[in-house]
Length: 371
Image (cartoon, rainbow, N blue to C red; front, side):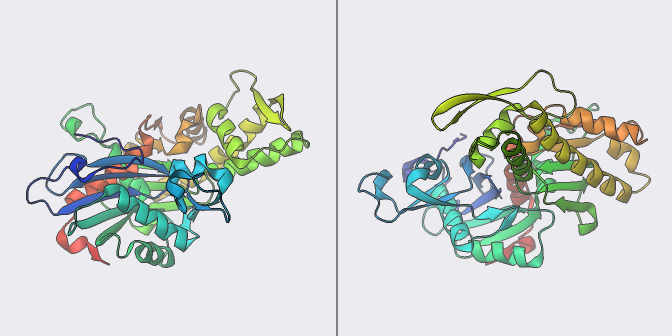
């Protein structure tokens, strides 16, 4: 059975625990704005838990009135923290793809363990997705953060895990199926970073990965600044700006005027934001195009023609309308040989975590790092 978990409490009776099972495998996509987990017991294909959780921790404000927060909690997580944001101090553990608040990150990782709710004595092994640009300091910080919460870990670049999660094993024998793990360029546009990876059947090396700190959050920043410049008397929160972007984002030609209703000072206004949204998203497209060319030049001459037929965009940025069409147009205009660009689809939020769980199931014993 698949348990689509929504941060509600579970009893031990709900835990899928096959007789004799003592190890839980966790695929953990620790995202800047949203995180995703997939977990199962070792030796089974049944999913124990599948959840998407906003990556935010809320600490109760001083002097908060009794019974205002659920259970008089001192710390809230994910959607609960956002729901009660007027009465908590919101902390984002991760900024631009890097851990920035280690105590909050530790609390968030503990929350993930609590969601799994393992029986006593269970060995928890986690494959954690990391940005393509993760350095030694960040890797050590992640290990330190989850030490004592997970027993063993493997850290793998997110775009490779996204390709593995996107892969449909049931179609591998089909002659018309293009395996994304065999030879592809995977473009993972998250909130903090855009990670681009040559995926060619093995864990990528540093030469096959490029990460840039230009992604969804940067688009939000550019869009917010542009709205403020066009409408100086309008104060929109970053959450509202992100909501506008997610609903109306596009590149290329604008399909129709974009008129957005907002509330300013308690009064409703309508803002014409077509050019502002298009300009902010085009900046992202330009960065993705420039960075993709870097990786394409690193592919071997024997693989590049096939690689160009398998360029895949995933992550939240893949929802920008016409992004695949416009990137393909730019590559064509630059003279690349018949490139084909497509988006991964509606399940993009889960691909990294799904791939991480697949990697956990395939991992050899000597690949796990003890904490």
